[in-house]
Length: 130
Figure 1 (cartoon, rainbow, N blue to C red):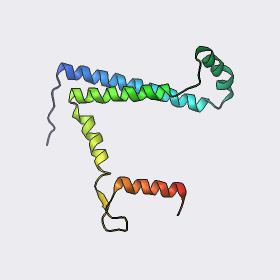
Figure 2 (tube, helix red, strand yellow):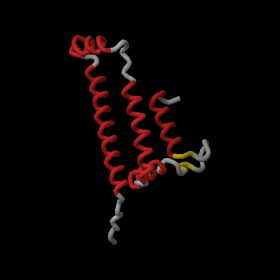
Figure 3 (spheres, one colour):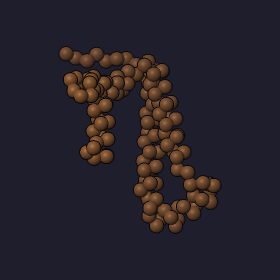
Figure 4 (cartoon, rainbow, N blue to C red):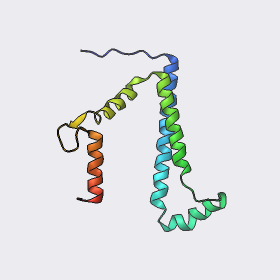
């Protein structure tokens, strides 16, 4: 069995380039945000970078990067939907649906899905045995 090559229109190719650019920008922003949080407890950040940062801004709010990443993610999903590029969307959709079917049918909790079971296990590991 061979896979058929799906021909993409020029507009879909353009959307693909925009999607890649957004994905790359989000990756760079996320890695920079992680780098700041790793460097924050060090002397280099406190003595050098924090004074420069405070001179240029009035606050020490680091959440703007996360909000920008969220906004870019919304834009990325909108472009995915507009381009009808179902390859990445369907792959993610299949990954999410793994958690939805019932895992436990006859138990003290009734019908339990994979998501509920994972949440219960995480609570159990966090709070310990009750």
